[in-house]
Length: 442
Image (cartoon, rainbow, N blue to C red; front, side):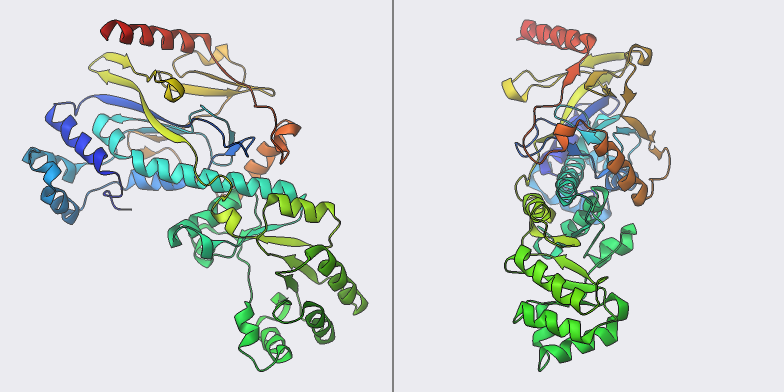
């Protein structure tokens, strides 16, 4: 993960901070989502493991520094700035909501407290990894809700916005409750179950469908899944029934999935293949999956591709990374924006979760004043990881339990009433004090 994987203005600000002798100031930034997409009742936090990996390995390479020196924006930068960057490592703290935790608008997913230049430079990467994976995990959770217990497999790498996005989409979707992914690298890197057998091109590459099916059985044995709709779905189902085991099941990828799945199920059952599974794909999303389930379609599992790996109905989150505190020497200066819908609240915060609401309070407020569960936890302290990341299967199980504990209306696929997120009186008082000070200065 190159240190240059950031916006140019992070680097120009870093040069300016250095030239202004601000290297000793300690900044606290918070990463939040301003508002939920209209099609989401909650978000599912994801992306933390990649954020930690990035912070722990942050380092500028000589060729990166040579490139920066060549840019016109840095012609007036002090030579010592580039030496400073060559020695830069992340030495700060990271607090974050565990992956797989439901979160809501204006709640910090992560807090970075570090020397100002370090905290500024990491903004772009942190926003990218948290926002993308949270979007995909949240979409996956909705697909799993719609399936009512039938497995969902993430099938969208070929439609993801980049090869790297496809890998991380597989990871995030698994945290969100999917049974696995079609992406082999995601399976290897993260220990996620992988699924898939053959495409239509396999069938078309043989002289006839039967020869292609027999060749697939010889290769895959009990893992065989016949793709039925290359030519004629029903005829292919009869062929699969004649061939019999070894067979995991069949896949439907087009047409009327309700009617076809019923007829295919009848054909398989009549051939004694009652254990053969029916796997359905074809531009599915949570609503289409729910419709198929409610229609009684005898489909055992679903592959959801494009609309999951791109979170197509809500492809971007309004994630922001804002300065909330700045420590100069022994003095803490609280900072906030007061610009309409882009306003922020000052001070590092903690989220307390209660059965019926969340309360956002100042991190400095006494925990004994709040009986809810504190969600933000230390992840990196003084540049060192506090503990190893949990196994991804544990994150998935935690997410499943946390989603089940949400109010029932939030687990609906329809738009529900907003979940209450309250702010502590001390936090609101601090915000008003900071606002009044800014008005006086202006």
